[in-house]
Image (cartoon, rainbow, N blue to C red; front, side, top):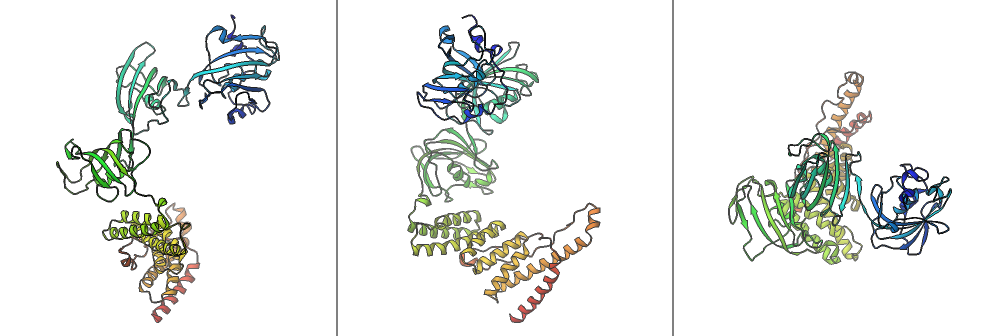
Length: 608
């Protein structure tokens, strides 16, 4: 048939499609799976009916812009055949959703999966409309198509500006795509319009460094391992780069690219001071947790490549994770590894041996030296997770971790102490599986642990965290002296002097002679008075200040210096706390309140 494909082509089709999807077309986006023999309308106006003939085991469907390849047979409602790609023996291809075929096809084929065969019945508005396509298709004809979707090429404007058009030639493996910090191994061929080419095979480089032209990085970030693509790059995505290819800024280049391998590089620490580069993928999903027992093969290197330690041949280096049996950076990175994984771990000095000189089995690590390790995680026995413990075990676990935290606090290892206290709290924070006796013990333990957490956070100047921990204590025991005192310290550290005053006054209701609370109360009230004076001066000269366009608060008032926490020694800890700055702008209420506070101080002094 000489004009067989013309019947479906843009020039001869019915109403031209808009780029925007109509209300009727939107329905197919919520399309759910059909059964063989089932019929379903694909649009709200029932303009397209689909009947499934052969289902597919695939799940993916083509997207707008993809080049789809189909066989079809087109007939009128009376069975008269007007066109058939099967008769010609050639697959028909077209860009999906671009208005190059009748609307019924753009909507219907978008619901199909690879290998699927169906019938599409298209009413005139989704076919050739009132004019038809003489001489084979009459006006206002409903058309019936048997369509089989063989495959498609994914064609994407990946940057949204037409600068990079990507066509997938070979689908990749899995779902993983490279990230900005990863390395990749690629093979490519670049071709200019004049036929000049450049090729590289199995070349490895960090994505951040790029290759050939800026657009290659953008393409790689959209690819999966083993994926092959053909791209056209132009505009800002090409440039003269000394590659020898002769690229010109704003020019055009055709890029045939295969992503052979993704070499993952993970930031274990957010600042990049500890990184893990995967050399060989591990097995399964298990990773070491806190307290896991591991057996590894490792080699430690100085920056110049000198080995400073190595697992002896035929042996494994064994330790318990997160128990300070290895340097912190190695422990943290190992907790990101899968069993059987091999990785290169790079560790800055602060997460390695720090300012110390450290003698190891093969060489001495100088002070302030970054190190790296090649590590293979051979054996892994995970520690029992808290959720897997029985009720009685949870209380014992909490007591053990609390004791470990106290010991670390005495050594001023505050972050690790906080970690132990938090781990202990996770075991007793929920008591739904405890009996009555266990609930009572768990509640007492939770109060003690939240108190210890607050003590650490005060010393670390995490005043918001300390306030939250103390509030949990006071929710269970509103008269808890430690909780009230520490929360007052936290409020003072945050500049909330009035809240600090309220907690201290409540504490003194229970312990009128508490000297530490009285000392802190005097300092808090002094800060409130100072703030009032500052506010009075500011608001008295407000308009002058505004006209000068200056800062209303040129200098924040001094907050009260905080005393040592007197309630830490019995927990195995001692703390000194920072200073707060500033306060809440006040009204005239403070003047009257200041007088009241002075009277209260005098009365307190008389009764002490």
